[in-house]
Image (cartoon, rainbow over all chains, first blue to last red; front, side):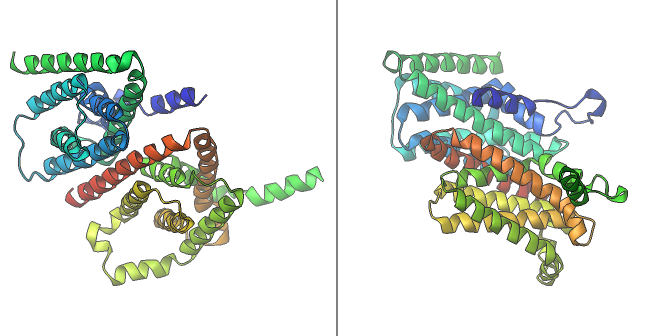
Length: 195
Length: 204
């Protein structure tokens, strides 16, 4: 019942405006913000990877990693909004984040909590910057913010759920297979940028 | 008896033609504001580990007391704001939303620590109630009277109570350990949304 209600709840937010009501900008409000990390597969896999990694390590790290990621992402987005300085190689580093996180899941790396947060913070900064660049062009930027933060968080939760579930099978090998797939997809992203 | 009850209910909820829609627009005011809904969910996550129904009734009484008091003393509060030039920070037109940004940050921080203490829960509900009441009072075109309370602010209140009851029952079905982890993660979302929205409003 809860599962069905959750699906209905999530789907109700995924509606987009009718074409007759759309303004000039490509980004409208909540729907665009929500779909940006979901449909941008590079964002999706990196955040999904963070969730799986947290679940793999267990303990406090299950929630400390997904908790830190949006906060650092916020700093990246604020740098983009305020235009303090421009980040370079944003696309490349986002693709690199997918490769690195996939590889970390593959080797089941379990470092100190602080180091784990530091690793995801570097990537979160660039993910946040990418969201922040699009923010001022949205018709309703404040709804866009709420949309992308919620979407990011839900992907984390999905990653935690998947990691928690997959870690129980074949001595955690299922999670590692997902890690391989994420790494390969990351390599394809890099390939696509340069070719 | 039935006819008498019908007339009593009709008298209570009768909306004169010139006020038609204010009650409904009050309900819609909550439902169409994402930040309102997120803050409400944050508050309910905080209150979830309460099992005592009497305590929920106490919290509802606090909510109502602060809600109505803020509406009654809105002029005094506004005078204080103008006195200390707080409206100049973000501009008065953005003030109703800025209140919600700060409420979102506050609830996020409280959710991080996830306090069991009843004092923090009462404090949270007082601040929540004050913030939403203030937000509603700034949007309401009428000067506060008992009649107007049944219209716009009453619509807001009904939907808040309605959503709260449903969500509390839904959250009760989820394991407490999961709720605790989710609360901390959700707290960080609220902080991020609050900080980003307030800075964006300041810049643009």
